[in-house]
Length: 180
Image (cartoon, rainbow, N blue to C red; front, side):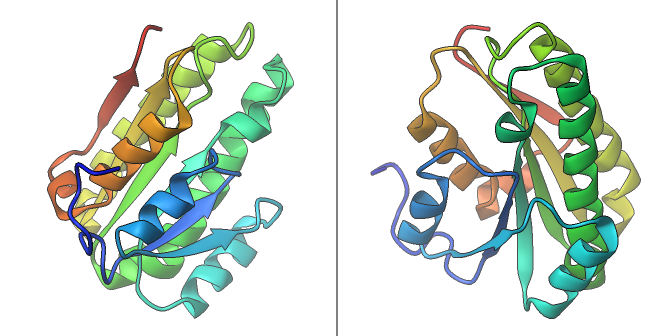
């Protein structure tokens, strides 16, 4: 990842949840971010308490693919529930009190099963809704929709951009990568 300057994310504390694709944490650390992992099994209160204990959390990156699994209807509901629990817990525990922050939601890839399109639309809708509802607290929210051939490195690069100072200008957006 040579397109970003070293130290770009120095001082940023990024929470990863849901089991992000390999390489995202390493890419963030390489640019100077401190990376924390949120246990995907936490309920909302536990997630809020966890975020409240951590100092300086500036972003949450939630990846839906591991929770989406085979992509059935139950997986659709489960992945959205987990995303909401993580987003609300980290936002109310750390981001809202700080008066700023970013929520990045990574939807399942386009070829992740019968309900992949529904999941992608739901994550876009969640990002748009959060961007409106939490704007008064200085929070922004975006969604990433990887294509079937999108590499983990491409997702990692976009995540790094979105949690950087330049990414603060984007909210309520869906970033589609590759062919859908």
